[in-house]
Length: 381
Image: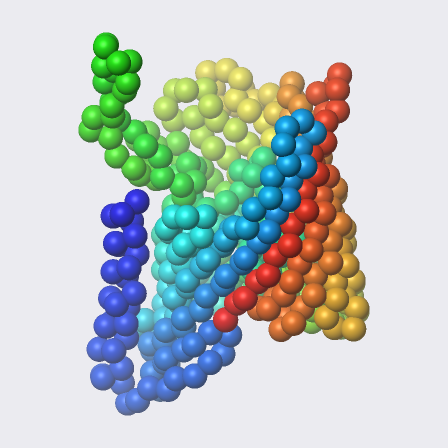
């Protein structure tokens, strides 16, 4: 953990030094604030934007069985550096999270635009799968994505991607990515030696890494269509205006290259609709699991869905509702019903959210439910 924090800390002065050297070669530089503090060369070949996001949360959980818990937390404390180097077409983004009591790398990638319709991205970034996960956590209306996000394998990973700037909601959006398939979180690997006297184990030769020991590649495809001047990757209709909508679908295939019979296929169809302060978005998910020696030996794994609606009142108050359900084959169904109210003090940058949720589990024989109340203040700049 210390080594990762050291690497992240070293990146900041490195980027500043690079920009400083570039600025000397340029005719001049300008600085200011535009959704983040920026420095850029007058010839637009070099730019650095520094932004941050802090979320302070209080959560009360009343479980179906057990003791009630209550605590404050920092679910996200992000620092982001972004811009371009050497050319306006070569973008970069670095984002680290200092929340939850540890430092973790979220994004670090380079993105080159050969033209507006063809980009190449390499590094660590969000998988192009599921609209609610592609959304920035700072632009959600609820404090976290629905339970479907984790259940169907969204999140970040390492790899390479071809795309057309789909995150900016062009009329037709598309992305094709090849990734590790193991996600961005590091895992501990090594040999455990057990003391025969104490029974305690010690890891020898272990290491933390998010690079898989055996490559099980993951192929992702996403395509969609958008109507109107849609901001399709920001929840709630803070922009206002006439009817705008978008629909997209994605496929995520994890191949069985290690002989473990563990390949899978997940697909989703998601949508977003906005009009005059009203917003509605949701998705339907389907997953199959490999059940045999060949990747083609797929069997039903799970289905899921979520939908949420909101309406902006007087430009500042947003009542909202969400329902989500995950239905695995041979497992317990889970569902989520959430109600909330968000007060926007300065758009998504400064907002206060209060929400209550019922998290249910249906085993077929019994149904249990946990209750959760969250209050979260977000500051972004």
